[in-house]
Length: 288
Ligand SMILES: NC(=O)c1ccc[n+]([C@@H]2O[C@H](COP(=O)([O-])OP(=O)(O)OC[C@H]3O[C@@H](n4cnc5c(N)ncnc54)[C@H](OP(=O)(O)O)[C@@H]3O)[C@@H](O)[C@H]2O)c1
Image (cartoon, rainbow, N blue to C red; front, top):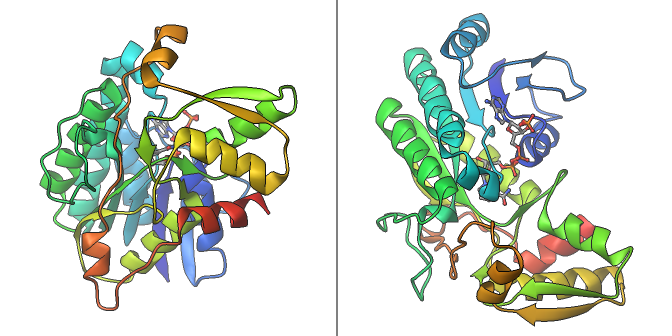
């Protein structure tokens, strides 16, 4: 039986993966509190804890969904974020290398500055402008350097079971008839379920390397908010504001890239190509 170790299993992607693999002939070793057999507690920043769990289970695959994901929080404590997003990745990638496991590291569009005007290719040179982006880039380098069997998947604007923009909009709709949302940042909202489907597919291959795992198409945060309200039938108006205006109202917020669209060049070149859903279709499925 194949053994798959999923870290950060209580997070959005971790939960989606636990569902994606549910009916498979695999043993899932989940870290953190998910109501499921095979659960372990493991702090990825603790090399001894990581080594103990890996020695115990000898996983065939390690999927790292653990991360410091609070972008503003990373700005306030970059050293703390580095421990999780880079040193934690190092600990896991070293173990993957030792056991010959396939290693999945999930990264982000925030490794790019967002100054481009066409989709970022997988091999474009990263140039992060936030603490979150810098620490995730350091994690990318650890993964690729320490483990030759690495799948590095960049995703963005993720929503699933947990805290995310879509749920924030639905929560606000309970008490407001207008919300202010940035309309000059462009990206691709991505469902954790779709990303889990991609990981499952790649896990069955030996096509290691860098991929962009995002839903197809693009929109602004304001477009996304309007679409959430439209699909769920909420009568909420969206006031479109600039990033500059948002920063004025939220001075402690981190810089976010203006253009975050990621090319699917590598997925398109797989045989057969792997096609992620259009963002709107995936969102409708999620909101149902
Ligand atoms: N969310 C997005 O919009 C987005 C965008 C681009 C890329 N990504 C990347 O996609 C991946 C999955 O994101 P997500 O949204 O599923 O994240 P999430 O919901 O924030 O989940 C992250 C999980 O990691 C756990 N964790 C944090 N520090 C840990 C540590 N030292 N040891 C073990 N577990 C730890 C967290 O536990 P606690 O909650 O207890 O801390 C949480 O359960 C991450 O690599 C993230 O950087 C996410």
